[in-house]
Image (cartoon, rainbow, N blue to C red; front, top):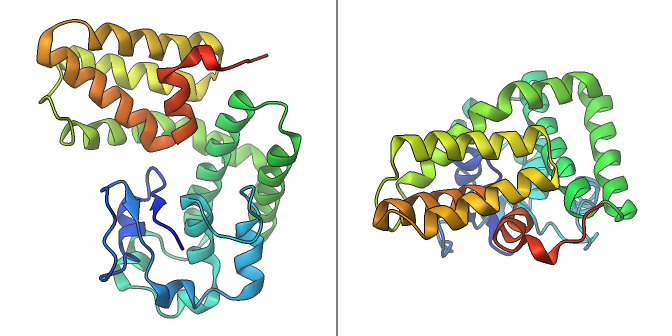
Length: 240
């Protein structure tokens, strides 16, 4: 299994499965220990590998997160800390479903004509609903009610990673606001707002501006690589 981008909101959980022999190059990535991947049964593996274009490989952080949580072989050997962070049960399943829905929101915005990929995510959400007794309405409500807090958490984590120090308090407030607004209402205007704010920060206020641009960029990338690319280069998108 290649190094995988950690899923926003589940970074500490995914670190519990980190291999001691293969450290990732970046703190945003995780190399899952072979003992956990080997414990994923075939049915579980192919169910969750089916989210990405490669239907046979678990090659995204979300696929790994879902498989590690659901595989009975992993449940019996996973670290105590992992169980404490995300115990088996409906509340944890709702968090996982919300993360899956978040990816669907971004996919529908960036690639609305990709019916095949959208269908895979819809199928996965239906599976999570049926398995854990969830409804689509409560998944979407959980997502809306918690996205602001998650964005704030991700932005705060990225402050420490900035190469230019800490942005101003006002810049941090604005960054959290515009990212949250996009996830609540994914429109081209809100994407362009993030892009223009990034450009503004990068070209003003010296290191404080560079710090704000750095935090904004890294925070969006923490959620979704394709979304990060779109924020930096929105002209490449053809959105309907």
